[in-house]
Image (cartoon, rainbow, N blue to C red; front, side):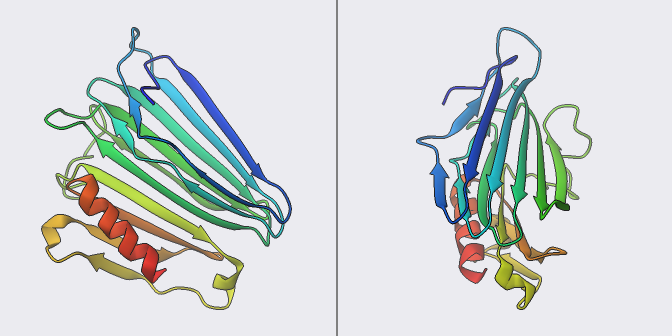
Length: 204
């Protein structure tokens, strides 16, 4: 969708009731665009997964176009026996253009307790976002978050994943302090990002 523009307020809510299995995606990429105002746009997602239910949240990439300003949040509440598969991709700028301002926050609560709360900032006015400690010149980043009660007995190991050439990006698989796994990846473009995330998903 060609939204959100500057000043827009978008909110999506989804609930997987007890025993349900819900898969959600989007028809095309979401493009954050400059609007008629310099005010930032917001895009809020709230997901709830009940007992013995599962939710797959796999939207197409979010593209931060030049001079856009978007603040995105994703808040997830899981019951103790719920399962989650979340995959997100962000592209910083269209071909040949710099990115806009993009702030994302992912908050996960499991059985009422915080399990993950992270925030990232990219683009103009975000200190060090393009430096060696963050993206190091890459323009595509993404993550996979998996929550599964089976991880309680078989927690995954931390692993670093690369493709054939280190210049094509990196991904790291990190177990969380709970029945969960977080994959974080960065790459020069969406093609290599998807290959990294696909390979990480297969390992997870």
